Amino acid sequence: MVIASWNVNSIRARCEHVKTWLSTWNPDVLLLQELKAAEFPAELFKPLGYESAAVTQKSYNGVAILSRHPIDVVSTTLIGDERDSHARFLEAVVNDIRIVSIYLPNGNPIGSDRFVYKLAWMDRFHQQMQIWLRSEMPTLVGGDFNVIPEDIDCHKPASWMHDALFQPEPRARYRALIGLGYVDAFRFLHPGQGGYFTFWDYFRKAFEYNRGIRIDHFLLSPGLAERLESCEIDKGPRALDKPSDHTPILVQIRDSTETAR
DNA sequence: ATGTCGCCTCATAGGCGA
Image 1 (cartoon, helix red, strand yellow):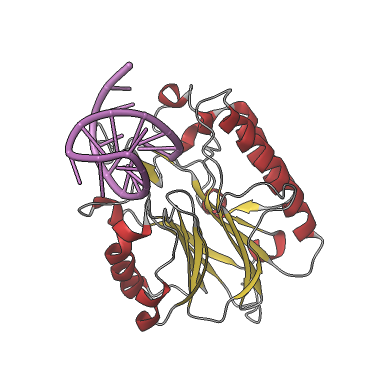
Image 2: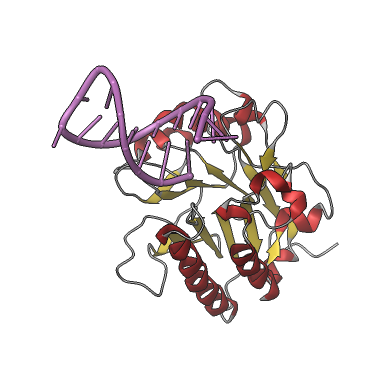
C-alpha cells in the first residue's frame, strides 16, 4: 500500500497539479494539507477513482484524505480543547490502518500567542498519540508537522535559528513522539543523510539552490514500522509552474499478510 | 529587514499568514 502526503498551499490553486500527480503515481491514499478553502472539491477526484474526506475552513488550514479504498472517518478534531476551531486534524481508518492527516501549527513568530498555541497543540497531540499506542490498530500519521527535527533537516541551521520550526521546544516535543515508539519513516530508512527536503521558500531561488527544510513527515506505530518498505520525497511537483512551496512524500507499506523478509 | 505566494476585503491595493 502506497500512502503519500502533500501540503498543496490552496487546493483551488493546485487542483490540476494534484490530478496530474495522482494519475502519475496512483497512490492508494493521498493526505493533503493547507486546502485554504471553505469547501473541498471532492468531485474533481472521483473520476480518477478517489473518494475523499476533508475538514475545511475559509481561507486557512484545511486537511483531507483521498483514497482508492473506503474511508471510515473516526474524528475531525484533536482532543484536549473544544474551543480549538482550526481545521488541522483528520483521523480515519483505511484498509485496517488508522490514517491521520495533520497540519501542525506554524507558530511564528517565537513567543507569540501562535507559538504558545503550537506547543499546546503538540502536547495535546502527544496525548492522542499515546492513546493510539494502546489500541490494536496500526497507526500512520502524515502531514505538515512544521518541525525541523534535526540540524541535517535544513540547508543551513543559522538561517532557521530564529524560526518557530527550529526551536528547542517543538523539536523536543517531536523527539518525545519518537520516544513513545513511533518511527520517522524517512529518517529511519535514510539515516544521517542531509539535503533531503520537503519545503523550499518561494523567494531567493531557494528550490534551485536546494535551500530547504524537511518538515513533512510520516510517523508509524512500532508494528506498522515493521512493514515499512520505502519512503521517498518526489521533488517533481516543486519544479512545475505555479508550484506549492511543499512537495509530496510517499511511503510504501507491506500487507500484514506478507511474511517479513 | 527582505524575499514570494494565496487568501480576503470597508476590493483592482493592502493586510495577513506562511
